[in-house]
Image 1 (cartoon, protein in one colour):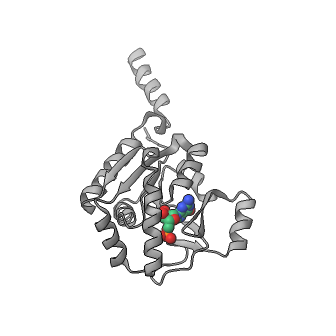
Image 2 (cartoon, helix red, strand yellow):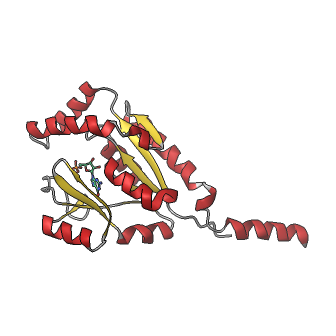
Image 3 (cartoon, helix red, strand yellow):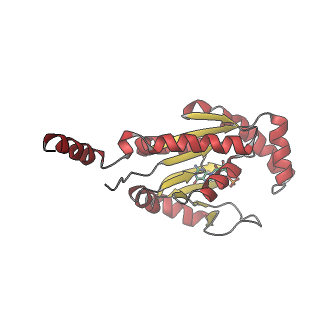
Length: 212
Ligand code: 5GP
């Protein structure tokens, strides 16, 4: 019996600097059935970012055209830049039984809830303290001081939305938090609705009882 399943849309959200990217990388690196949803963004590329791996970097007119043509499953303005999830790959990967990891904000999560709730499992990551959050943002040092302050203010707003997520993890230790997300994903994969050929499997078990 070939046990097929539909993929999980795993959304991991957090204020910037709470550890979401590190957790995502750790999950992704260790599990070949996880795909990353690569967003489009109008933000400038950081020096360590690779086109098509971290984001597809596009200009505002291209973003507006994609949004108008329905090519984005969700989209939002975050920290003054536009971001969006290209629709095409998502359905294809889910049907192939691959899980898709989304690093999107609460606005995007709410839009996906309206369209794809049964496929989704959502996790909100909190920092252990604001001191730690600020230290992580400063260590990262990819952003100017002004931008760090903007991200801290945004963190406050983002944290208002923790109740909209299925699971919440306070990220004190990267390994422990990653293991927790792995457990959440492992349970989600076993949901009855995602095991697409259970019906025929159960019927075949029953038929073996009926005619041994
Ligand atoms: P960054 O600029 O640091 O890469 O991302 C800033 C914020 O934008 C993060 O909170 C990230 O989750 C969010 N983000 C990235 N891609 C998308 C997307 O496609 N849609 C939405 N709604 N948010 C996104």
